[in-house]
Length: 256
Image (cartoon, rainbow, N blue to C red; front, side):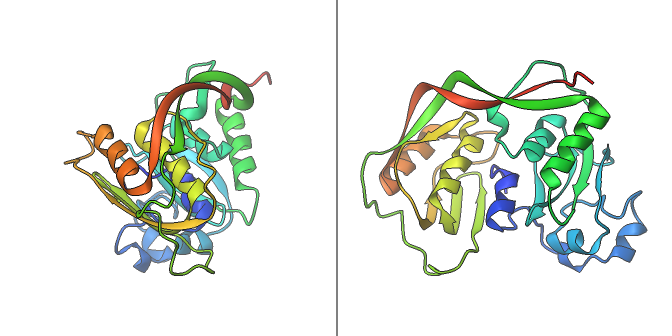
């Protein structure tokens, strides 16, 4: 997984961040290697379910990362900057954030595996440790407008598992594949490839299977124009630059 936003994996129940082999880990094995049982790379929902309920943010013992994993609102990540951790806590795209204060440069490991309310609990922990809070504000900013230039394109297919609520997503350099995914989710994910807010103006609703490939050798050599062409050719979708008033998260110092 190279550019899917991690938070939405929780929303749709897709384990897009899980690495092969991690499902065999046990709590006993974890405790023998790290300061906290949850401080492991590529944790999965089984790990989150069997550990004691807690919310913690601690200095990272891992190399930098830009993704985290979760299921049913429970989250865990390693090597994250606050620019990645804040969107997890406030359930917002990192491209819809502005900062009225400087952030620490350190990276952190975190867990939030309460039965419910993990986002609010993370917000409280961030305020407690870093004296940072977020508030929503409507601001005008550059965006990409996603429009439907052609209806009934061949690449938008109704899912085989039409009655299931489970979605599967896999992506990386030059490919994107999902099954039974809500269209609104796919539209939101485009922000993480183009690194700019994307506003859905298609009017398309429902779930779809999508399988896209375009010429892109690796993550360091992105090819956004090729991806835009594939969106148009296979899905009938066009991305048009614009400026819109959208809701942004303003991060600032807590007054107390």
